[in-house]
Length: 70
Length: 153
Image 1 (tube, helix red, strand yellow):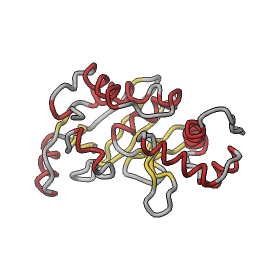
Image 2 (cartoon, rainbow over the protein chains, first blue to last red):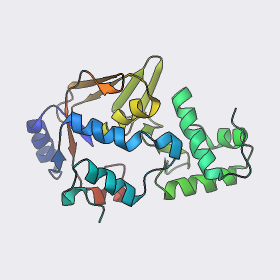
Image 3 (cartoon, rainbow over the protein chains, first blue to last red):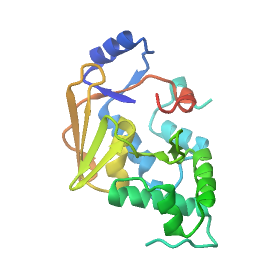
Image 4 (cartoon, each protein chain N blue to C red):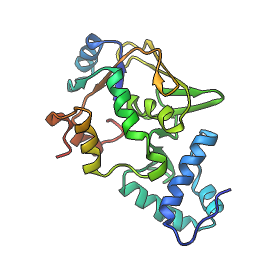
């Protein structure tokens, strides 16, 4: 989960390192995801279970097969 | 100082201690520090680490069994720097870098480099929201592949 300057730089990196072109989205969307993911981590002291994690992703609109645990 | 509650789940107390230690000192505790503080044996700490690993709450260093990741924190330097006042943490990825100001409830400046060209990319978080920002997150692998090689993911 790396950060790039632009879509063009993602494409160049994928070609250079022979890596799959995955998904990109805005930093605003990433913030939503990080905020939802970590806001109660200190209270629970555990990672979400797989169903909980999938529910968060669905709630935030990450519904394609790329974002499926199965 | 945290003292082990013998009626509680030790692994949960160990997890809480790891997080508190990282937040306060920016460093992950060693197993010896955990054992001393929670008044338990190294073997008990290792068992707790095993449970936390199975829950994917932490990731251990292969060579010595010490903490490598307690997401969003990295116990070792990475390309994701998170600065907040006098505190400087390392994050595992951009997802986690943004997670540190969320978890610590602090303003922060995140610095990393474009994975392609190396140019500096910075994000500031103030008052629980992003202020200045630049960069585009890219996820190379589909979610179901991540834990096959979490270091790459």
